[in-house]
Length: 100
Image (cartoon, rainbow, N blue to C red; front, top):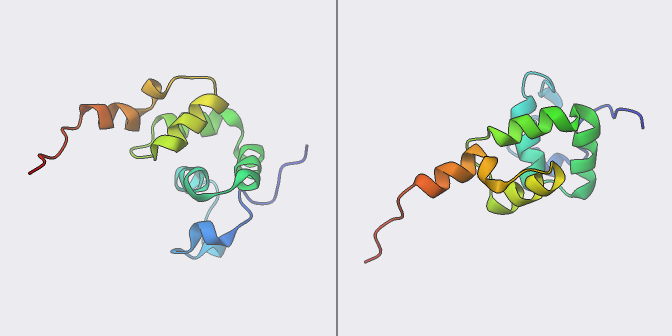
């Protein structure tokens, strides 16, 4: 399958930045995290074809914050455990707020 021209299809994923000026290589971490957090299935497929699973897995494993469902999706896609993700470990180590 041919590599797409860009790693996503929907501009709505990047509603808060000028998506036309994004450097796909320099901002790969930002783009990958955002596509996996806010993109649909087709956006995730495009991102995987553009960057490759190895690079995406490495970036998501080291992400500072991801929603739990994103961690579970990534762990299923890349055949690893949620506990392998940096953000998952940080959540487990964080103390919960005291409830009044």
